[in-house]
Image (tube, rainbow, N blue to C red; front, top):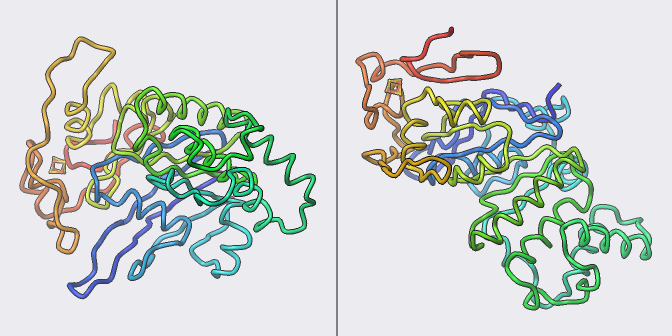
Length: 321
Ligand code: SF4
């Protein structure tokens, strides 16, 4: 049984101009101790998928179909009170994009971590809270003596680490990180990702990394799901996705990315723009940009096919082997 099993999830935003079909029938799984990268261009629905899992969609956003099984329980059906008490922070926590500025500038970092523990576990004794805070700081590579510092006394990388410490303060089973490398320089970013990888193994944590940066996924994840215009077009083992991608969009994304491991110097971008999700194109949503488009692509939405065990591709060109 996977830790997280998202089945045919659909999330729309209801606007005055009509429903924005932000997430359309997506399925994926995350196991304990495993990291899944959710990749794709901005606006493809990655963040909406994460917000749906935590049921913290902004106004107008609504899950209109599918299941989100977390530890085998469908959290789509859970009441807000149960989500707050049983799932958020204790079961699933999230580190938001650009969250380095999420720390309150007028409180000491250690106090902010302690507060997270106390809000969710109010009966924790003062001494235990202090000890847990120190351990959490140490765990993310910050000297516990820095607990008495204010956020402005931390570097960007340390603030990001402190936020990760807060996110794992109540021992969740699943950590979602939305663009964890944003606003960090590459060296600090690499250190933070290394720390997250170690944390995943030590805590047997399931992880979902949401990013447009394929190199972050290649470095950190075991599995990858590629999203395009609200749909998952390719999903499976990271090595295979990077070595022999089958979907034309994944192929385009990988070609558009610099490689530091091979002599590849030529980078090509995908022509055109993602569609307006108020009115996505019929058939395959990628067809207006696809170099291999066929008549069938303009009429029929390709369903995901399991090409080999656990590896899915949604494209009319791809057949089950
Ligand atoms: Fe291209 Fe057709 Fe495959 Fe879509 S279904 S990616 S348009 S070949």
